[in-house]
Length: 191
Image (cartoon, rainbow, N blue to C red; front, side):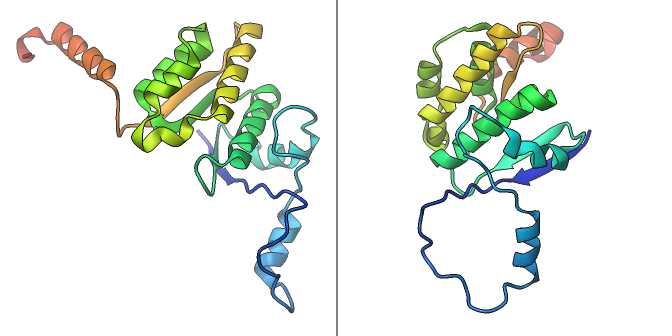
């Protein structure tokens, strides 16, 4: 399996820089970045994605794409992730979105995305606590709702949601492991 990690930085026009660029030649690093950079039309999902075509070339035949952000919960980074995911689903055939969230949270949100089970607002409110509080926002809700709508339109080719963090797994995960162990090895389990 090929893995490609891409860190996207969204720059919006019309926002003044906080510091003036250094005087003199830019240097080889800045020049290389200038040659490789591809401007984005917007960070907001929806509409034409022609400006994401350079991303398609960078991804090639990769089956995993990583999108990072400089800050958690910043609208611009979350909106851009949403926009890129939609593009990757529609244009490149990607079908799973994984986020740094508890595994059990991913299972609950995946049930919503796949089958419409539960209220995503409630799941997010209940699950995105403490270290995961920044994921409880309207940008992620919009992404989940888009994934659900996509699955309603494409029931034979669904998009999935996955939590990939093991810091907190939720009691239902522990209950499932204990139930499996009790069934598979009844003599070796205790309550």
